[in-house]
Length: 297
Image (cartoon, rainbow, N blue to C red; front, side, top):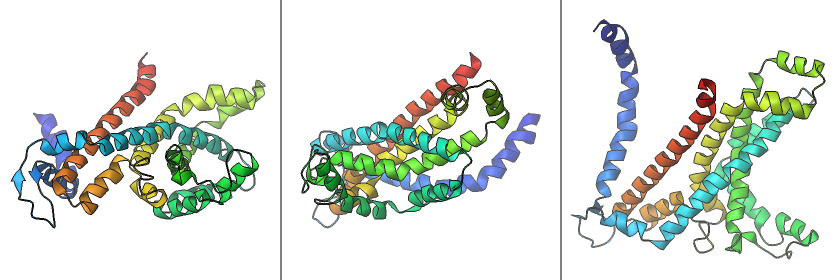
């Protein structure tokens, strides 16, 4: 029992303020949302408040818009994260070299991350408009007409959201990977240079294995950010055309604040939280197997 008094209790009392703050900030709203998800609450109408059990969940799951938004969230969260981190890997490798203008590039990267998503989304919307920069370049390359709008094409509107998301969230991955590269001992690179190793072999056999855990962390964070980028989606397409770019976060927003259906909104929020936890758990398990699994073998 001595270790409880000397280790457990000091840690508990040391973390108690954080537990209290977390309880009031996160747990109470979570419990309130969970409670409302089993009720029928529609603000601004004559709906009668009542307990409906899991009917809200069944109604949401059977909704075709929810199904489309769920698939779009998967495509953006997992399909867009890997290109974003691969782009970040290239940029981090360049910034890790010593040359004039290195700090300027890093400043631009941080600036891109610091720009609010709603502002970045508006800028990308201007680029994607008919006769904009994207359609103009595409017309010169023979890929589309100059008055073509990718935002109005249901088949490719989601691509515009992925492109804007890669631009928005690749900087944070770049900083993570660059931080991992800076932890590698310069002696390893000097030894590889003496042995006559090329830049490609040095990167493949020294840099990449030593930053693998940072790469996995970047994948985890970027996929979570992309799947919940409701402000970027709203600035670009508003979920349209139709529901081609609707994601779970924007779908939840519409039910809560546009339809003002707090019951279904609470159910959608719980599904979104469950989906996030499952996705994060799978990614964390993959990261564990890729890092600690190799170390133990």
